[in-house]
Image (cartoon, rainbow, N blue to C red):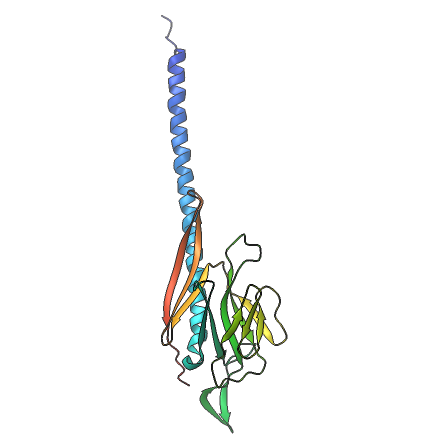
Length: 222
């Protein structure tokens, strides 16, 4: 007796079931890959947020709270933070000396500004930059932001920084690692600092905000 073969309908049904299984398998693997990619990107952004907040806090802890000024711009969604620093361009910290005796009062070496700088192309989020000027300044009163536009930050003592170009003589412009959506700060002592970035979710084509907030109170009371 000859063995019975498969009919065309049976073959087509088997192929259909096999196709559904393959499609489900690839869909599951693709979803797992997307989730793994999102987790990786999320971890990277969290690290960048933590590093940026820690960096700004470290600088603020070394300055005088009475000499810190905040300037809100872009509809209160961004803040420029201005303060004197006792570190020179090479990162060396200085204290006043009375003869050969080192005092506890910082010897201000320059002025720093932390502020958001938009991406010139407009294709990605911007950066948070640390603008430093190490020319002579008077630190009797707080140095504030007098004006801020798309290309320039101008301080109350006449100092200006380019938000899009190179640093001038006696200046440094150092962007923090990563892409950011905003930098905001409120309060005086403590200052509440918030840095925000965005995670792009490819599956839904949306940007998910990710923020880190921390408070800082200067260790220096001078």
